[in-house]
Length: 593
Image (tube, rainbow, N blue to C red; front, side, top):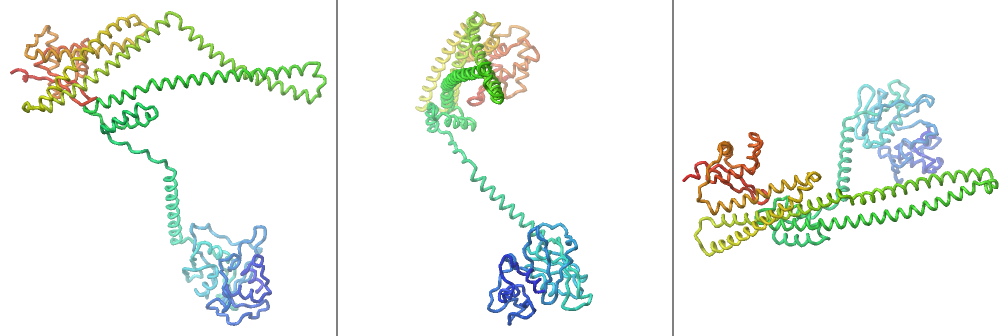
């Protein structure tokens, strides 16, 4: 029994402790809470206090050290487990038959700290059960049943493994042979709600820690936020205009300009400044095209150097293949061994394959160059020249259109400023401030007249270009359609400007009468349409409605008819800046005084 207790309580192979040493043996048994006895059964140390489970004058050993608890550390898998008799104060535990299979256990629940102990003797008390199982670890609760089983809850999960080791032992109370004082223990994992709740809390805590760690890692790896973009002001706009002219700061400045426009910073007062910044951005298009041309030139140079290098490599391949072919001739071939001939033949085939592949690649490059040269040569025929001339005319027309749009936008800006000055003027008496505004108004009117003259000169140039573009009408249908649209837009703008000027001079004159029954019918339909649109409608909306009734009518015809009747229909400007729109309204009896 003493030998079995020593093999269970102490791992002599790890501690290198001789079982014949009385002091070491007594210390080990004292930490197990047993009376220190020798191999022959005599008491080794006096003054043992079982209630304290220690001896005076001897430092207790931590039972958590491997090999120092009731259950020894798991032996190697190739060594069979040998269980020995365990002596306790109130009972004795006899090991099961080693020839029998190990006792079965259920699947371990997550976070299990509770074990089921069955097969207890009928006379076993909680004190005896605690005496046996407290050597496995700290016990927090014991729930004993009247049917010879109990549940034991430990403080930690690893203590359950030590308790499972006792499964299969026969427990005998004292030295009694009564059937009620003996029983075979069956220790198994128990599923307790407290264990599962603590395990879930621990898992949630670990998950929170993991989420916090990931969040900290993401915050650390997140790139810094871009700097905030300042709000629009005249000072910031002046600085931004300078940055737009600088090539190195263009990318940063264009981002700020885009943000301002998307925020809606453009209004009547700032429209001219924003237009100048947009024009500065447009000036970088030529620089970008030059950079693209430079990169294309570098690419062509790289292609040329690659072709030259490939030609040199192909020449060397030809020389190597020539060497192999010379080696296969009768003069040299007979002097090589069979293995050497085989290697030379393999090398020759491999070199020929590589040479053919490089030759095809080089021929492909040359074919591409020949195709490009043939495309360049085909440009000498008359049809190509005509296309080039047409494209030049289209480019000139596009440039004139851009210039015309620019002048029209400036004219709209000046008109907005004139309307603002008129609104500020109101019905106040003429003071020094009003006289200054009148001078500004006169200056703006003179400027408008100059812009109208420029528009007239542009119209004459467009008419000249139109006669030239009509010759290439069959081949340049897309360009002709664009010029037609441009012509209609410019005619509308000039017609509206001239009619407004005539209306200011001849506002008291009576409008001419209707010429035909068709015009009377159109006026009736237009009056009804505008009457149900109290806020007015633009000429495109009105023309789309009239197209459903008569597909041959044009927007210009409707607008001329409306301008001939100023007392019945009036034109107003609505919107601000880019949303400025001209709308026609039905005056009804307002124009008759």
